[in-house]
Image (tube, rainbow, N blue to C red; front, side, top):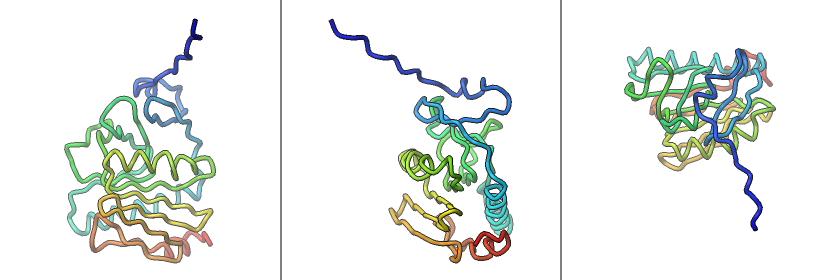
Length: 187
């Protein structure tokens, strides 16, 4: 007689919404990943990036929307994968509801925290690439590094906080990380 196989619990978005107040987690392929609160520096970097992108979109009368975490992204438009990217840019208004984004955003930026390193560099990289995200940036202040993945062109770029980084979804927009690092006294 064969031993019984352990049954793995598969969670859904309903389980995310049933979490106790103040507890945050992401859900990838039905599995929970707890989220630690972001640091002050993490939030300051996210705020600067968000403001730069929002200003560019508004100045150019763009149709894309930029959202700052916590913002629900139902990545595969199903109930098994729910993430809260630090910054999401969505150019298809049909993906947006009051609950969040159903489907892959066009551009996602994650700011690495000590507790999120493996998720941001590996798990989310795979999820974002396979779900249809066009561009993914990993901003890692501890390593003075910005990794840029343009999944449409299959290009990657490796930058520092001394560089200006060109956005792939906008031909005429870049973010000057040297200005951000000076303003926030990162380096």
